[in-house]
Length: 112
Length: 111
Image (cartoon, rainbow over all chains, first blue to last red; front, side, top):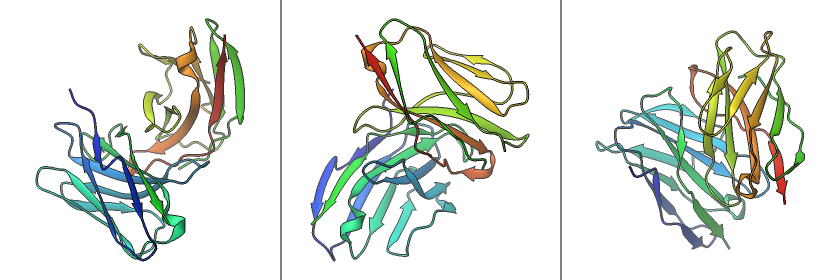
């Protein structure tokens, strides 16, 4: 079975631009969570979506937004990019909202 | 969720057991102990989790003390591919699905 997939794998943007990252959960999983991992640190929780509704939000500015589609895939959008947004963005899926999470390989974003 | 304390780094000889400790002295009765690992530049990989009983799967064993204030992840026969950062996380299911990652333990398996 395919695991969590994310696209693109790498991305380079400039300050002020907007970016959309995509995630497809494991088949049958209904919940998707997003994390940001800055170099040298552990992942930080951004959002959780379950059945297309936001179930949790971490301490991130409103420039970060997300949504989940009827097929349970998800997009993370970041507006007005800052240099500090350079990070590995991780998506994790779980069966329901509170089960064990399984992570994808991540999207590495570089903001210049 | 309760905070965890892990040693920043550990070494282990290839073929030997790797025992990774974690302190979670403020853990609550409904909080689970989860272990993930992250090999360089990859997404975190789920290893094992438990509530109060010891658990074993094909990857590792999890030993939780009776008072639940600490736990140990055991990799029975470490290989070079087990070199990674290992994260011990405590979470409760009624707090949503957020995982709070600390600094983890960087395990280096040496030949």
